[in-house]
Amino acid sequence: MKKSVLEPFWRPVWNAVDKARVRKARQEAKAGAVVHVELVRGEIWAQVRASGPRRSCQVALPLLAHYEEHIEAVAKWLAMRPDWMAAHFAGEWDPEYVAFLKSNRLDVLPDDSVVDKLRWGAKCTCDDSDPLCVHVLTALLHLIWEADEYPLRVFRFVGLDEELLLDAAHGWTARWVRSTKADSREAGATDPTTDPIEQVTDAVSAWNVAIWLKGAGTNPVGRLVPHFRTGDRME
Image (cartoon, rainbow, N blue to C red; front, top):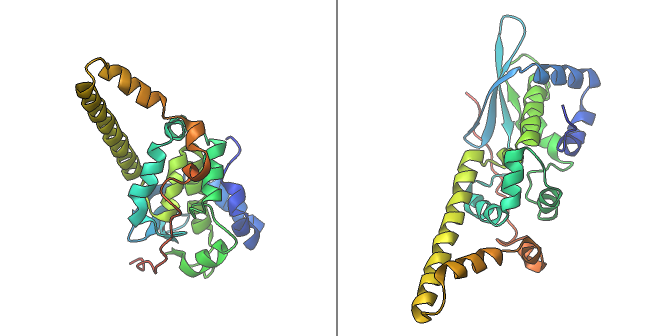
């Protein structure tokens, strides 16, 4: 297993619980104890296999922030960076992608308040009185490792489903391509000596990452403001 990109950001959690509990959770996560994960009503729900008669436990983790209303904005700047999309499918974290998340405070990376958020909002159906039980830690490690392998899954921590995010990003790309072609056809009609295909090629080649990174281009949609709200209790 390659070194985790995300685990160091969650160090406040590992430091807040007994080391033996973290080791147990790590063993369970590596053994595939988490069998199902989904976003449900402002929480991350996971089914975690457990020992004993209970067989499995239901875990609910609070989101770091609520960005459900911002999915189009996030998708738009992802569409502007096809290299980040490619890195996602290759299972790699682009260093500029990490820097972008940190510098624009998109809240997918936890801060020191994460322990209080988990102690207040994490729930498990086991009998442990500590909200940071082994099952909660197992689910958290599973989510972190999945995001290590597929970087866009880090947005689950703010309520955005990976597939919906990809669909929205592809939608923005298709919109821009159609717009570029329409502009090229219009220009070609105005100037019959201009080759429309050549204009499309020029427009695409002008989509330069180095230019995009200058100035406000690093945050094309403006700083997102997180929404915090109380999640529904797990039934």
